[in-house]
Every structure is written in C-alpha cells, then in structure tokens.
Length: 201
Figure (cartoon, rainbow, N blue to C red):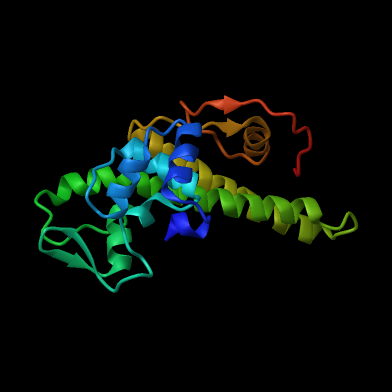
C-alpha cells in the first residue's frame, strides 16, 4: 500500500532504499510484502523513512483492521497496540509491571517535555507579539505565563537528570530567559549556542 502510494514497483523501492543506505533488495521487499521475511529495526526505520510513513504503520495495521495480533494469541485494538508500542499503556498480563513502568518513563518524560516546549513556544510568541503600547498589567501577565511555561520545562528536565537520562540541550536564549525570570536550569543540562539575539523578557 505504501509503496503503491509512490507508484513504485519493488525494484524502484529497492533502489531508493539502497540510495538511502538501507540494505533491502527487491527479493527481500517482496518477501516482506508477502509477510514472509524478517527485517532488523534499523532496516524497518530506514524503510519507513524511504516510504515517508511513521515506522509503527509498517507493523501495526492502524486504519486497515479493527484488531492487531501483537503476540501469538494476544489481539488488541489498533489504538491499544499503538499505546503499547509508544510506552503509553502496559500490555495486560505483562510479567514485570514495575520494570515496564521504569523503562517506559523516559518516553513519558520526552512526551511531557515536547508538550512543555510547545507551551513555552506559544507563551514566548505571545510575549513577543504583545503590542508595544500594551499596559503594564498585560505585559506582567504575559511574562508570568512565559515564566510558568519555562518552569514546567525546567521541572521535566530536572526529572530527566534525576533519572540519569542523557539530556537534551537548552538553547542559550532560553537559558537567559530562565535566568531573567528566576527559573533555574537544572544542573547537568547542556546548553547550545544559537544566533538568536532577541529576548522577549
């Protein structure tokens, strides 16, 4: 289905995979489409990139069927299968729930960080767009919303540090805004230098 969306035959897909550094030949692709072959995680991710589809769709028939057999005899609705694959919900009967929760936590923290950065971006944009003639109360409120968003980012970064995760860097202008607004960048979080010289605060 995904190959056909590009109007490629199996040879054309194989050639595009080779060009992208993915070692999948025409025979292997034909076997995969017939659900006969095996593929490594790296090959799966490369194939998803070449086909321009989310990797999970290559093994979860979301939108094509109302159920997915994730393990022999274990059938889930597609949305439940996606939540399991993404670490959002444990599979019923998991043999070690505590371990699953521990290893699912980094995925949850990155989702939370992504949401917090989106909120930070929105509040920063609101502050930048504030009418220069805005009242002191409007400026103060916008700064408070931005500071709260930065504080949420810092809280999640601190949780990542505490868990011993490899930290994503904070941009230098975001760190400056944090310092200006009294929000501490957690120790251990790296900073990346940018060319952004403007500050909303």
